[in-house]
Image (cartoon, rainbow, N blue to C red):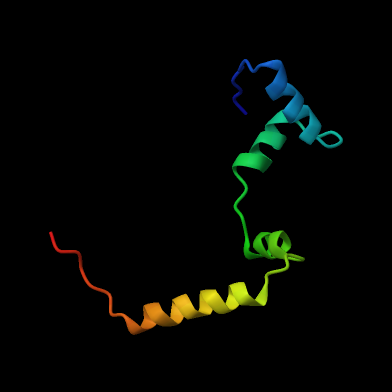
Length: 77
């Protein structure tokens, strides 16, 4: 595998080092962070445990209902 040498400042190095687990290489840490695609499971994990006030949900439903009643129009240019 081809490699490239890069220079990073100490703060960036420490951030990478903190994310490194076991025998993981810095390349693996970078790829895990930047090349990983988010999934629906990631979203579920992120929102699990978030409490939303019922009045907020009612307001969102009202906005959705109102949008459904108003037909979409093309912008006049």
